[in-house]
Amino acid sequence: MAILGESGLKAATYLQPGRKMFAGSAQSSLNQISGCVRYNYTTSGAKDALNVSGSGVLQMGFFIGAAFTSTNSNVKITIDGTIVLNETTSGSIENNGSMQVGSFYFNGTSYQYSTTDSVPYNESLVINVTCNSAAYYYYRYYRT
Image 1 (tube, rainbow, N blue to C red):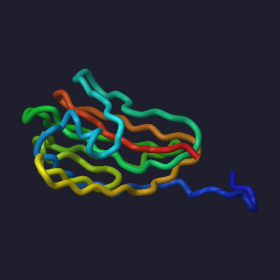
Image 2: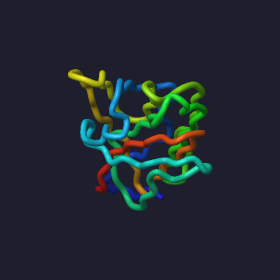
Image 3: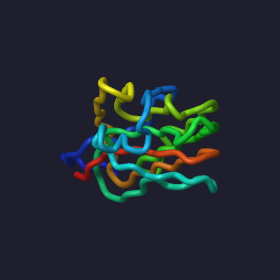
């Protein structure tokens, strides 16, 4: 319930699907390059890569495979109880991962490009991932 005069950011209700990112190598160490936290996904169904209560801002989030066999992946992001993205990707995500928040490009040697977004949440943030092989979900957020 909104209270007159209450401060705070309006929580996101939608995230744009179909965004991609590229990493030519070093999929398991992109946390060092992007400043994100790495969640190691192992195959066995849907798992929460991140589940936090309270308010904050999601700055970056992307899902990339650990091998060329990483196909048929899904990312579902729920903000304050509302599903804002539920996206399935088919095909290898080993180099071309799915990007939910922010931007990321790394050619594997000398060039990288990384930006952040500001996607607010007021009560909760849940990022749920599925893939048919090992993969990594990278995220960066802060609490307010």
